Amino acid sequence: MLSCVYGRNMYGVWMSTLTVASPQQVDSVPCVERRKYSGKDRVLYATQTKEQQMIEVTIEHLEQGKWVPQDIKLDVDADMALSDETLDEEMYALPRKIAYYAEISAELHAVAARRKSRIEAVEADVAQDIRISHAASGIKITEPAIKEKIAISQSVASARNAHYAADAQYRKVDGFYRALREKASLSIALCYKQKAEISAMSSSLS
Image (cartoon, rainbow, N blue to C red; front, side, top):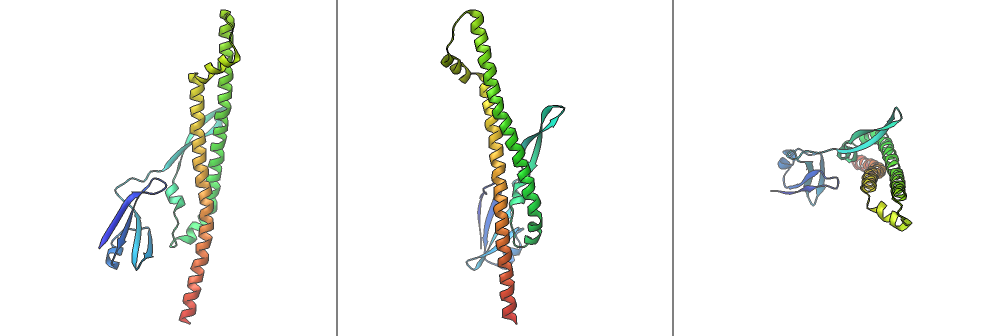
């Protein structure tokens, strides 16, 4: 007997959870993780019918005095994966992954900060244009009226939207970075658990 639950995981990747009743069925499923559950094997595997997509973010690098956008793809599913079968390999790779995500997070934080500064610059330009326009026409305008015009300015709205998008990118990758640090703690705990199980098994055989 084989039952299946199908849906997306927390990172948006399509996954299927199968509960199987026989070793033959377990061996027939291409799986990446296997756990004992209520006397049966619960198998988690990435379905082959849905494309696994990578997370894409945009950082910036300085080139001839100008900030140039650069797209970066992050394989979050692979980087966040944790299996007791490949634990040693993942432990060795973790410091490099954590450092990489920290670097990308810092780059995105800088992008968001520049976008926020851009809002202030655009607001100042719009306010100046409004004052010049009204001064030329001889029409007086109050500061509250200027603020109202700034609030509905399309250029200011575009600058704010750019900041929101940049800040969302930063917060997302910063979350992945923090999750990787938690993964390091989990990996250490799993290592101790494996050693304890091996020690207990050796004691029972001796």
